[in-house]
Structures are given as C-alpha cells and as structure tokens.
Image 1 (cartoon, helix red, strand yellow):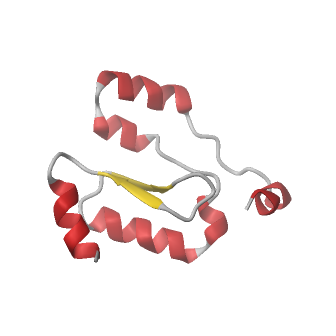
Image 2 (cartoon, one colour; image 1 turned 90 degrees about the horizontal axis):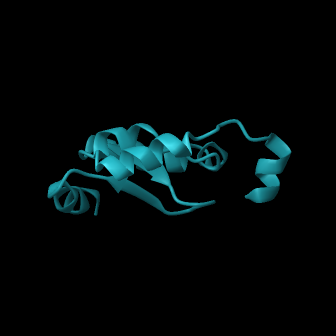
Image 3 (spheres, rainbow, N blue to C red; image 1 turned 180 degrees about the vertical axis):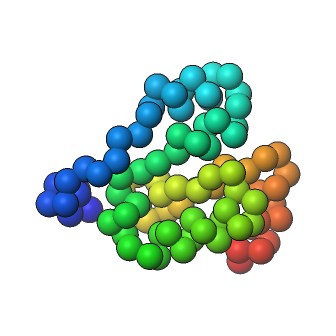
Length: 88
C-alpha cells in the first residue's frame, strides 16, 4: 500500500492537531469530523462500502486503520453493540 500511495501521491492531509484537541475535550462528534486516512481511497469501493454500512448503523464516523484492511467506527455509548449485531 505504501508503494501505491507513493505512486499516486498523498491526496489528504488530516488535521491531527484538531483531532487531538477534540479528544482532549472528550467531544466524540468533533473527533469524528477529523477522522481520515490517506490509504482509504486506494482500497477502492470495498473500504468505502464498509464505512458506509457502519455509518448507516449509527457510527459518528468510520475509517480505515493504518494502511488497512481493518475499519473502525466511533459510536456513542451503547450504539456499537447494536451495530455489531446488524453488521454480522
């Protein structure tokens, strides 16, 4: 994935400082606004489909971890358990 990223160039620039500030405030909604990953577009529709499903199940945000292939979601307290059952 790193070779593909190098070939295609970095197209996103996450606002890490804003994400850290939101984490320090404990504001999940704000944290969710700053979640992004430059590798996600390189995976094509598979990752975007998973992210879409998670958001439709109540995630405030969903994103690829590292260079992939795992996707995580940020949920309000208690909402994640319902999403797990739906997404199985």
